Image 1 (cartoon, rainbow, N blue to C red):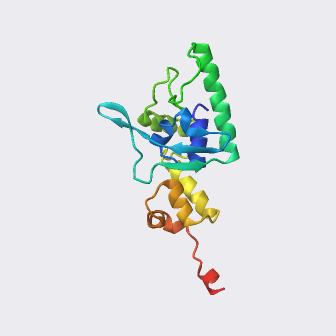
Image 2 (tube, helix red, strand yellow):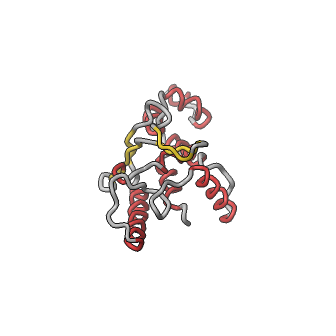
Image 3 (cartoon, helix red, strand yellow):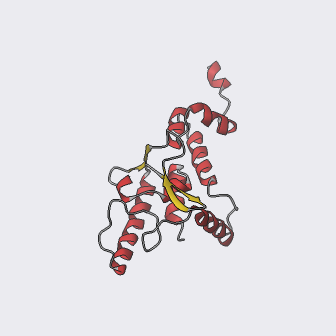
Length: 179
């Protein structure tokens, strides 16, 4: 599906849609299996605008799992082939990872609408694109990752925000405390 790469990256990183759509070539290090979140894309009445991440903790480096690196490599190969076919030449460091064929940014609102259409057409439960972020957080909690690490990955200002949002997912550990 056309959304496969961005959905896979959302699930693998917990990034917001605006952060994903603002990713530039210089932000991604596939050999090092990481990416940097440096900006976000938002839709305003004046049009699409790049802005700093949502919070002061928003600028962060996120490690990528091997499957996300593989998906990103395949996506980038396709992107380079398309650029060559269109005669656009070598991409600049500012080239967006997810863009229209002419290199212009994709609309966050359109991404959400396209995601909803994809869910319906594929017979998947209709959840918001933002639910992919929650799924990522839930998977981290289920894998028993430290709450401070989860908070940093999601760019929460503190672990308290993570605990408030996802408290229902943390297993009671009274038996572990007794042991």
